[in-house]
Amino acid sequence: MTTAQHHQQPVSMRSVLLKSIRALGPALVVVAEEDADFTAADVAARLRAAFNFMWIPYDAADTFLPKGSEQRPVEDRARWGHRMRGAGFRAVAFSEEAAGEVKAMLNEHAAGWGMKREEDDLVLTWKGHNVVFASAWTPL
Image (tube, rainbow, N blue to C red; front, side):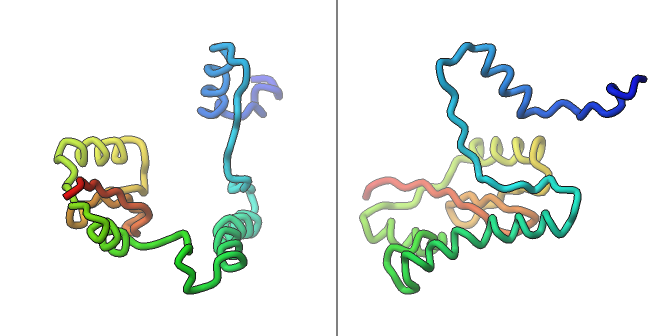
């Protein structure tokens, strides 16, 4: 094995995707992504990046939307349910098939992620902690 071969990085799936997109001959490609680097070898640098990544949206919200403001961006599942019912909607449970597909995909491709049902909702979890919920509603 040559020195050049020894120092080659493993192929990134992102690079494979970009090469596939390039092969389609697009006129323009737009990339939008969080500007954070969690790949540093140094644990302190990764922690600093993670802290900034999590802190900035909350700091921005506090700057522009004071506590108690009706426009605060994040509300929990229960509050959304209350709002939806108040607006004349009825919760509808996701089918077993839909829930099973999500769970199977997570089990196959996403270690650490999980999915559970809470009432009629599906809740995406990270190591058991709720992260995002999905709910379905029909008009009354």
